[in-house]
Length: 273
Image 1 (cartoon, rainbow, N blue to C red):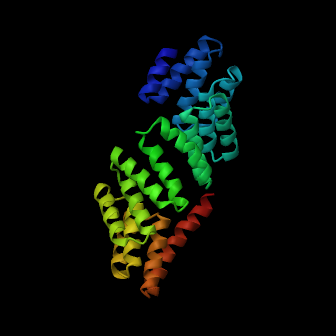
Image 2 (image 1 turned 90 degrees about the horizontal axis):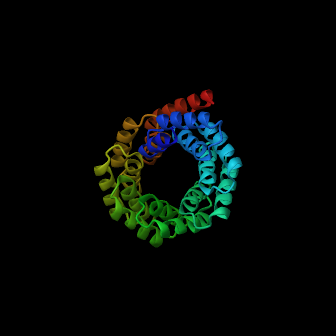
């Protein structure tokens, strides 16, 4: 059962992996650390984060020296928005295995999401040194530099990601850096290329509208943002940017109409909390 659980885990068939890992644990009265770890991994990928934490903690109690289980626990806590517990697990993993690229990567991501961009750079740079061909490591490291206003470093890393995979995400990100630098023509070119790759890409579509707005092409901005709001009717980003475009053009009625839509969405969100 353990071998099958491992095979299904590698294949991404997490429900089957969990079933076989549980069977392996039953056969050994729960005393099979590798099966326990694999069960926690399967639960994590199934979105059953609390169960992933429960089994991950049991696996750590059985074998406190497993850095990979600590990383898994950090990811599970992060998925539950428990940043302090997640950070503690990543730090424990790095104490056990200071060169763990996986621990540095996920800790860097956590720090990035927490707005601690300079600290995130330290960890993501270590992860990138070990995995220079990983698209997302270079991409997220670039985003940290971008948030810190280090645009040359950001562009170089985004270009590295682009060489690995020319996705809509990285084309939009490069465009955003050019926009921040005030180069509207170049920004427009990258946003249009991103939309060519993925016509429904929300961020690229909104950013294209912002380029029009910044360049004084208010009617074009409204048209572009109306298009994105129609594609993503629940998007607060699209609606808020559209309101700004209507206001820039002095169209109070248009702004009020979109503001009513946004209010309905926000009120529904409050009721569901």
